[in-house]
Image (cartoon, rainbow, N blue to C red; front, side):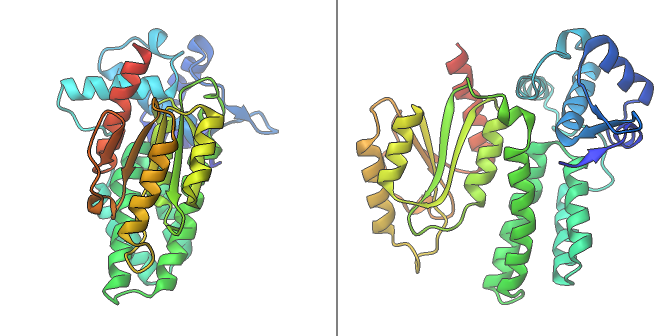
Length: 314
């Protein structure tokens, strides 16, 4: 994962180097690794926790009380306080809005400035919290690129090039974080797409959001038969299966989607829920019940996870 010096972290978070050292020594807020010369090196997850701690401190929380909390708990605490104050979930004033960065990323890709595209993508990940990065930067970026390919403004190779870079970023967020590796005892969720659907960004982004909310994730990826999804749910005892539906009609017929969902739902344990979303999800004629839910968008999914987590914790 990306490693940053204490000077860079201070500039990014707005927390002084003295305060960073103090929070580490007095409250064990984080424990950055050190290089051979003894200098602190922070990963992206630690930077995000520091941002959350700083914002919650500004909202009146005592560092000694919140320093031991996990990122998922800090995120939920900040989200609750942000809702109460009708505030926007930004950690500090960025030079540009997410929309501006998306346009810049598109421009760099059009000109095939891949090193600049990659650097700019990393910069947005550092400048914004992970939710904003996923929902307001990565997701809109991918949609714009897809639309431009459909309209003939970009070639498929542009989209594939960007997809490879973005996929690496999302995979690192999902698998390389310490938080992901410390959630084995938490409620598990399965993420997948039906056989024939090779689009995975929607479920991959949702999987990262689930980790941020404190859930254990079993990411099965795209192109999976219904029978395999059911077996995975049984083996892992997952109470929720999340399905992404984004393949075009020319590749996956609506009848095939219905068949996949019906087979999955019929064979899952009665206590297991099935949530589905994606570009094709609104074509599905499925009765919404306590077990079945249409994911309208990423923000809806994130909020639904929080509400469900509250019930699980309760």
